[in-house]
Structures are given as structure tokens and as C-alpha cells.
Length: 253
Image (tube, rainbow, N blue to C red):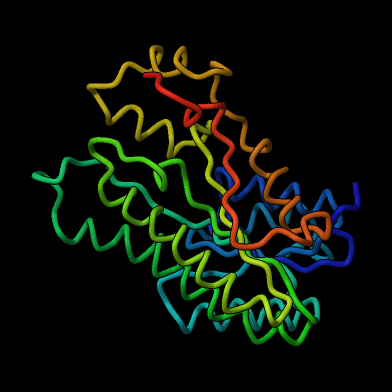
């Protein structure tokens, strides 16, 4: 407890799933958090449940440069500084290349990749003013490998890997660290929905192929994100942190 005392974080996609877990875990570790999302009722409920002193909600479409500026301003107005950005917001659309409309492909890239880039750009000023900071970009194991039906999602998550490394090179001189997190199967509605859409994959066989033979609870990813947000990871930047139950360790399913 207290790993993030004194830090102010902006977490996107914080109304549900992993983002909601990140928000709650950050507050439990002493951070004050701005929750960004487009799901206003859910996001407000998350913030209200944690209390006005620790958490505020802002409507935040990550594809909008203006809404990024507003979210950063909300953090500065409410808590006086900004130390951490968790680029967590993301969408997943399952479709084979031959069947996917171009609009769907572009939407996934806009939210997952362009939204991440806009976020990094938006926080450079306030993090520099604060003497440094930590940006955590949530990618996926699909940023290392591909799966049938996930061409758009995988393209966006590979892009996050590259942007993270480029940003780490650019921003290190300002004391800003940039790392990416690559979860495997996590028990969220998005992950379970994708598994249901992939009718040619046997979920039981997939789980049995994992060295740990189970999906992750969201908080298991949140602990890793909190480590990267904390001063304990002060010499880590431009790096990739995998939490996948061993899926990428070798041949399996």
C-alpha cells in the first residue's frame, strides 16, 4: 500500500474491465485518478464509489485531440499536476480480413493506436513541468503475434509497441518513461466476447495449452501497471512487459 502516494494519474477506458481495475488499484495505492471514458454512467459510478478526493470522471473520447486537452486540464485543475498516463482505452472487432469493412478496421486503429499517440502527445507538457512522469501503453500479446480474425486489433497493438519505443527515445530527456504492457487472456467482457466470436477456437484447449492454465484476473494486470507507474520502475523505459500466463513462452495451442 502507498506505492503511488502523491501521484496523479489519468487512466483511459476506466469505466469497466481492466481500466476499472486499474483505477481502483491505483487509488488503493495512494494515487489520485482522473477516469476517462465514453461510458458516462459507468465511469461516474466508478469515480463516485472512490470519493471526490481520490477520483474524478471526465467524458473522454481518445480519438479527439480536444478531449485529450480537456482531460489533462481536468487533472491539473482537480489535483494540480499529472504524473502518470495509462493508455488503456481500446476496442476489439473480430472479423476475417475478407469480411471486415474498411470502416471497422479504421475505427480499431483510430481508438487503439491514434488514441494512444494523442495521449502521449497531450501529457508531454504537464509531465515535463512536474519533473517527469510515466506513460504506460496497454498493448496485448497480439502485439507480438497474430490470430485469424484479429488483423485490425493486432495491427493496432503492434503499432503501440513501436510508438512506445519511439516515445521513450524522445521523452527520456524530460524524465518521462514510456513502457508497454502486453496482457494475454484476461477475464473481461471484451476478451470473453472475442473468444465467443472465434468459433473455430476451442476455449478449453486454449486454456489447457497455457503454462498457467487459466485466464488472468484484471487486478493481476493492474499490479504490473502500478509497478510501472511507481518509482520502483525508475530505470525502465522503452520496454515491453508481458503478463500472459506463459502463452508466448513457446509452441502451444
